[in-house]
Length: 167
Image (cartoon, rainbow, N blue to C red):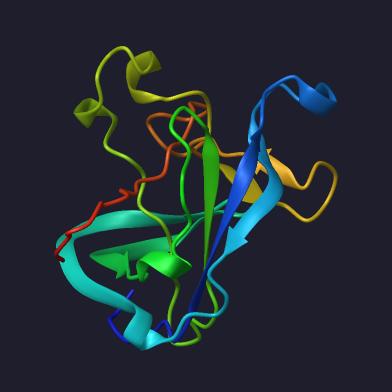
């Protein structure tokens, strides 16, 4: 996506619904715990992180094109507005691009080689999920059939940076 295409974001944090609850064999977001509300451009910073020719994947649809720019977005919150985590608690983060009308917005997959083997080959618990809007609303994400890792769990990349932090 080219810089400037996204005009707003919303971040949501949810409690964890563990695998097995409700008869589903994967964990997923549960009770909403916090929302950023609609964020404007002064509430995040962006930078070009890398360039590469990669496929652009839409869950439920498949590969929908290619992309060359990888942007890093840093969301900025003053301490009173930030979500306060509890040690040992699992949370789910949802990032919504409110308007990417001049292009597509997506989320990079995680580089599993950067994680300790203790995390199930890089996976913390199970797949990332996406909002399907039908059936069980949250569906697990797996690499598409055309990918070399087809059918394997797909993890998405993000980092939470403590204070003081810089871009």
